[in-house]
Structures are given as structure tokens and as C-alpha cells.
Amino acid sequence: MSTGEFKTFRTAEGDEDGKKRWLKMRKGVADIQRRAEISQKVNDRHASFLAAVAETEPLGKPVETLCEPVTWRGRRVRGLNPLASAEVQLLEIVSRADFLIHGFCNRDLRQLLYATKEVPIKEQRRQSAAVSRQFRLLQARTDPQARQHASLSDHG
Figure (cartoon, rainbow, N blue to C red):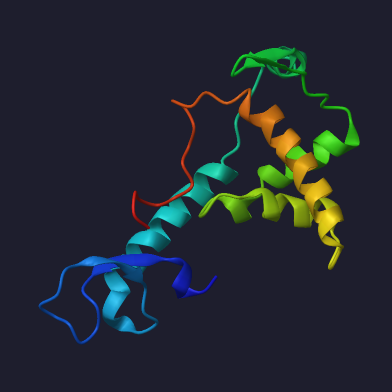
């Protein structure tokens, strides 16, 4: 990742008396404190992601709720099928450590699920719609209060 993906709260270079705002992080040592802060947060998230959980409950119990249909935003959403290869692939992709920093978007999943370089715009739209439907499967089972946000702060 380049430093341009991260932001720091500062004034613009050459305008020391100007208003502070969230700007792209510079490559030099000027933003070293913010870089260290971000790096520590990334390391903490990665460590918690890699932490093993000792589970004594049979696998069927926690998976049971994922397999049942739910109502989300007034619409029925089918249950997940953890044995279907397409849904296993989706779950593997969204649980990758790559997405711990900035999260993921439709385009990220589309590129990983379909692994095609250049496709016609009509095919891109079809793939994007399919990914949106898969997003809905996951979102319907996510508690918004318990959701772990991917951004490091409100502004950057």
C-alpha cells in the first residue's frame, strides 16, 4: 500500500497558518508519528485476526443460524450454504487480512471472485449485480452495533 491511501490531520505544505484538514500522508519523516499510530493499529488488528479461538461447541451450532433465512430491511434473504463452493469462496475472500485496513467494496470482490482482466461493460454490470446480491447475504446477518469498522478513524 502506498502512503497516499492514509491521511493525516495537518495544514497544507507551505501554508503553515492555514486551516488543518485531513490530507494524504507524506512519504518523508514529517508524518512519522501518524504512520506509527496506523502501523500499530494494523498490527493489533492483524494479531487479533490471527488469534486462534478454542471452540468446544459442535460446528453445526454456530453455523445453524447462518443457514436459516432471515428478514432484512423488510425482505426475505435466504440462508447461507457453507457447503457450496461459491459461498465458501465468498467467505474466504471477505475474511482475508487484506481487507482489515480499508475494508472492501463491490469492485474488490468482483475482481477476486471472477478473476477476469477486462470484460465488456455489460458483463461488469452483471458481475457487479451478482456481488451485490452476495453482499446482501452477508449484510443480513451482520449486527450493525457489533460491526467492526475498517477505517482507522472517522476521517482517515
